[in-house]
Image 1 (cartoon, rainbow, N blue to C red):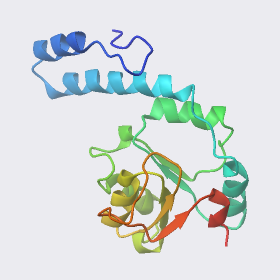
Image 2 (image 1 turned 180 degrees about the vertical axis):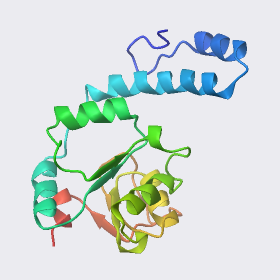
Image 3 (image 1 turned 90 degrees about the horizontal axis):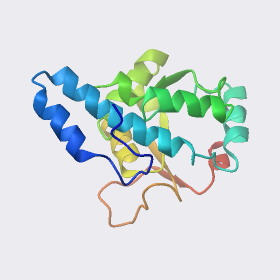
Length: 175
């Protein structure tokens, strides 16, 4: 069933509502919602680009013995395609997507799942992100947070969530 016409501003809400209203079981409803998410992700995938210094920085961190993980609210199908398209196949020890968790960031579930899988204490992890959800999840998981400026959300001094570190370029992570 196609609930999405390819533009991120259009989802056929009437189709979604009719499918949901015909269903009694939660799993069917969740599958419809997942399909809508996947269609938005597929559209966004065509526009995703790496930050200028991302691949070089990630490779340097990995070569320096750092364990790298990716925790995202994006679905597995799109993120696996992005990893392949952006040639990041050998970078991450673990990838946690919305398909692996019951609660999305800012809930810490995905971050804690990654820490547990890597056998690392959360308080020894630096989680880097570009959104309030990333910072909130890191704080809730008892991880250090690093805000990458220029991303999804702009952080202000008056905001409730303040990162432990702020960087303007990923290469600033290399110490």
